[in-house]
Length: 248
View 1 (tube, rainbow, N blue to C red):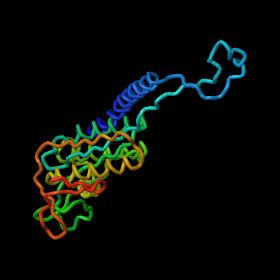
View 2 (tube, one colour; view 1 turned 90 degrees about the vertical axis):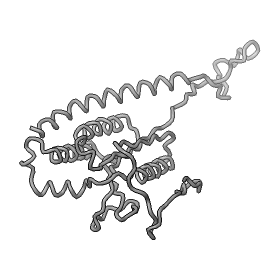
View 3 (cartoon, rainbow, N blue to C red; view 1 turned 135 degrees about the vertical axis):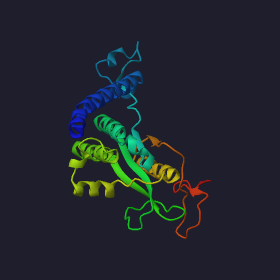
View 4 (tube, helix red, strand yellow; view 1 turned 180 degrees about the horizontal axis):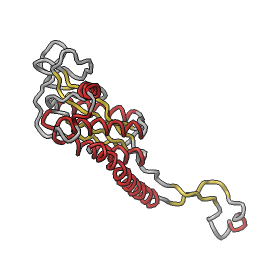
């Protein structure tokens, strides 16, 4: 059954993520070791003071090393209609990447994005030309527990089962189907909005002290939604809220 396949995959995902995290930490430790050097402290080593006439090695020394820069990851995943056949493999890769970041203690923020024309949709993002909003949904962060990460995996995996009418999809309760369709809105591809949201999250991460932040947007098509302001006018430029620089 599809549920059995999902449970079975979790074991291999954990194994792969731990292996990746181990390799990452090994490389990080190797970098730290390569930058280690001895520095004089300025404090006298009293056991060597008698040799001051013939040697200048009379000061205490300490090893100074570069601890390495902290890293963060922001990832935006396209939840447009055309991605419905990729939901299950996307859920699998999302699980591995989330667990890897969790095990390696890397700050991360993953979110799904799509364009919604539903007037009752309360999940606001950016306004889109022609009506509707860019909908963002948190699907992973370093503040989540491993159980929370697994729950998101199950949800997206099950959504893939439903969207593709895979075996046992009829056994999923109507209530849970309604819950998934409400939480994960499949719609258009507001790529520009997703890029800007990823940019804002990366800036927030940097402001919290993370030195190197990588931003990734995964999608299968071009942007088909333009941004508009609160008055419905098309936005042709965006101001960086931190540097005040304009991007067209």
